[in-house]
Every structure is written in structure tokens, then in C-alpha cells.
Image 1: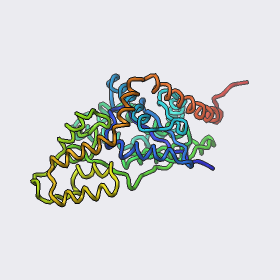
Image 2: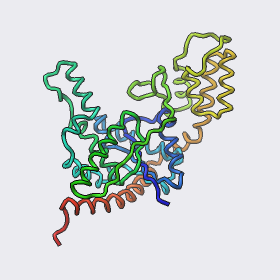
Image 3: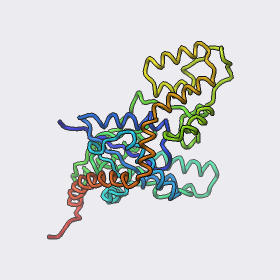
Image 4: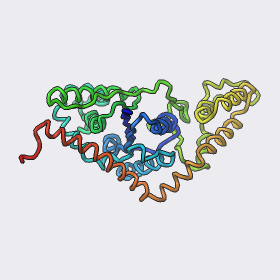
Length: 336
């Protein structure tokens, strides 16, 4: 059976939260168990340098993210699970691709254009003020991540679709100029993927500071759930469930029958305090075993390291073979 290669990067700039789990991690791990899928998951620590400059935070985030995926049951014998910085072939390919990428293409990248627009809005004399080459060439490194394994599909949000299109453009140019055989990747957009709201009702996001860490302590989980914004309806007054963050989060961790029962509670006028306590009990119970595994993994970083090195060896073997062919195609190889 020919397998579809699906590659997912995890930027190591923060602590995984409930929204990350429901929207990305849970469906990805479920997909990795399919026999027709060959999965690649990597800690994108070099990408993190574009978004953060705190070495301790980037290092800790890498540990927390790796522990999270392992604690939730990722089978590293089926999937290739590695740290980006452990596969130098990616960075070598990054340079090769950069030498074939038009600057004009990078000029059109959304993140770069947004940075320039922000400077212009501030009447800065230099429209490129504070724009690093890392930010500017971010799409090229992303292309290298994908093309190093000739991935067929890359799960991304709407804001990342352009990067996949750029990876296709870069691969096409390499194929045309050097007769390489890069696969043209496709963006994988989950139409039914769930986006959880955060404490303030907006999308749960680190940038908004409204997240609930996936494996925070029971005490902190209850404290954060208590902070979730609700309206002023009193106990006994019927409430609309579909527009409620509490209901949305509960539904993401519940069965259809549990959701129906909760909807009845809303219609019967359950109080917000009662609903928040019940949400805590449900989510806490759902995550209890995985949280226990997560804490054990954090206390045994050598195991996490071994798993990542195992994945890196698999990744390097595959990417190394591809790079050998690419070097020959571009004229960089032994004279004998």
C-alpha cells in the first residue's frame, strides 16, 4: 500500500493548551494510527527563533511539547517524531532552496507584509525596521521542512496556506531548473476542526493570553475555568448553550449523549457556578491519565531525548538520501 506522507510542525514557543489539543494534537495522533498514512511530527525549534528570543522559554517549550505528544499516546514506532535542529539536512536544503527562491516571492509573504505595514502605520522611515531575515525567509525554511521528506500533505490553518503555495512554487522551480523530483505538497485543511474559545470568549491563543494549559494542575484548572466569561443570567433562567464557551469546551471532550444532557441543563436554567464546576470535573477526569503520564515524562527528560533522537535518526536517513540526489542535481558532489 502506498502511504500518504503527512508532515506536522510544532513551534516551540509556548505551553500546549486545550485548544491545541482539540484542534491539532488529538486529530493528528488519531490520524497517525491509520495504515494508509506515514506521519512526521517535529519540534520546530529553529522556527521558534523567529517568534521568540528567550532561550530558556524555547528550550522548556520544546520539552513540554514533546512530553505532551508522548503522554497522549503518539506511537513513535509508527510515526517519525523528531526535533528540527537534530536534522541538519533540513538546514542544508534550506540554503539550496533559498538560492532558487525569488526575493519577490518572499516580498509577498503575509507576515513580512504585515510587519512592513505596521512600520508604515507608525510612520517609520525604514519600512523594514526590526524585520529579521528569519522572518523574511521563514517560508523557505518551512518549504525545506516539507520537501526534505517529499511530504504529500501538510495540516495548516488558513493563515498558513500561503506558505504551502510558496513551497509548491519553490519545488516547481527546482524541478524545472535542476530536474529534481520534488513532490508538490498540498495544504490539508480540516473543514470540521474545532477551534476552542478561551477565557475571554475569543479564540484560545497564547497571543491573547486567554489559554487553559492542557496539563496544568487540578487547582489551576479549576481556577481558570472559574475565570471563563459568562453572561449575567441567574440560576433558574434558561440559557443558550451554543454561544457559551463553557458548553463549547465541554462538547469538545464529551460524547453526543453527554452533550445532549448538558444542553438540557442549560435549557432548565442551571447556574453558571454549577456549570463551571461540572466542566472542571469532566475535563479533569478526561485528562487525568494523560496528565499523570506527562508529569512522569517531564521528570524523565532522558526518555524524551531518546525518543527524539530515535526519530531524528529515521528522519536523517530519509532526508540524507534525498539530499544526496539533490547535491548531484545541483553539481555539488565528489570529483572521483
